[in-house]
Length: 162
Length: 271
Ligand SMILES: Cc1cc2nc3c(=O)[nH]c(=O)nc-3n(C[C@@H](O)[C@@H](O)[C@H](O)COP(=O)(O)OP(=O)(O)OC[C@H]3O[C@@H](n4cnc5c(N)ncnc54)[C@H](O)[C@@H]3O)c2cc1C
Ligand code: FES
Ligand code: FES
Image (cartoon, rainbow over all chains, first blue to last red; front, side, top):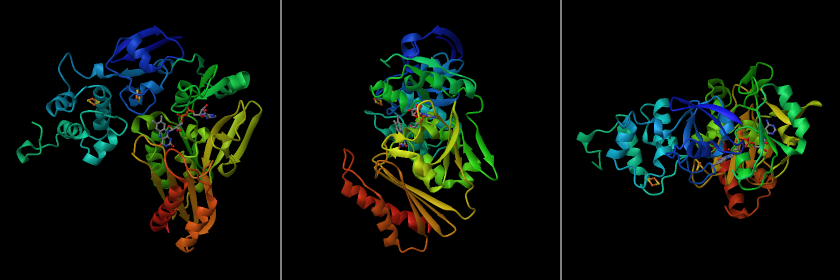
């Protein structure tokens, strides 16, 4: 089936197989490999992208379902090589170790901060509950989100990892 | 996805029902796909064609009427429900159950109706809909019929839905102004775990209803209780209704014990 999608602002028209997941289309069809496949079953969140303004697990959506939709992936996060506020905070707080979860994690954090610009620690944990990190540990990620949302005060010594 | 299948995305309900009639057993309705695509991936479902209902006009809207209450259509997702102020204000029990389902990403896709049609004994929305006295409207080319949720589930992952039939509306009667609800779900981790035991409680005009998940082949309603009943009697009624099994997640003894714990907690909140 021929589909037309907008990905990170660019329009693509592509022939796709009906049984392709959106994840496979992004990676194999468009070469956007920042979106990862961890579990393929909706559990780990490594495949998180924004579909018409809502975060979804792209392993649990079909490419054909995205016909006419607007998609945002992690490749749309940095602006011409300049890290976004969230990405810079992740780097500052060592919230990235192997990086496999990071693309999906950043997509969820971005979505959370759009809905709730100053989330509490509890709200941050809830916002990333669909994203597993198996190596960094969540402390640094939570700190990065606090920082990205302007809620860390370095003078009070809350910044532990800098 | 290794399995191959065709894909249709009708815009009108008549077209959708015609496709379901035409393909019969060979078609599967695709809503949010959070159960269905997992089943296809693991070889549990083998549809020849996926009939996507999300593009049907009006299917993403919630309906309201003074007489009938809340009307949930097939495209309404868990987060659509949670994002609606009227739902949160009038049906806090429904909102509490919805909030406990999976992660934000899954809630953006998973539909309310897909959750009940999938008929998992641990589905989160079923206990609330049972307590609230909701019913299902089933449509096919042959016509429509109404089935209360107390008669909808026939076994684990089994319902009265026939081949070619669509669950087109869930109708939730208006909630009483003094209704109070609570939901407790035992799980290992929030965000990606099905319930091990779930207890929903609704108190309304002195009447008390319990909706219990993960403790029998189907979600259960325990009805005919009163908020004045002694707590031990309510716990006994709940334990008499369930038929839990031991499985990979816990033993039936633990489930039986935890139903008592959660019923007590629920009563503290609603009675
Ligand atoms: C990682 C993960 C975690 C989860 N956690 C929870 C949880 O904590 N609690 C919980 O309750 N659930 C949980 N679920 C399951 C939950 O996402 C689903 O039950 C969901 O609500 C199903 O809705 P859907 O729109 O995705 O349905 P689909 O997957 O599209 O469909 C499910 C089934 O219903 C049929 N169907 C759908 N709509 C209709 C209709 N209108 N008429 C007739 N048939 C129809 C389909 O053909 C299919 O057989 C989880 C799922 C995943 C992947
Ligand atoms: S790959 Fe999609 S959730 Fe794990
Ligand atoms: S950084 Fe390795 S899984 Fe999160």
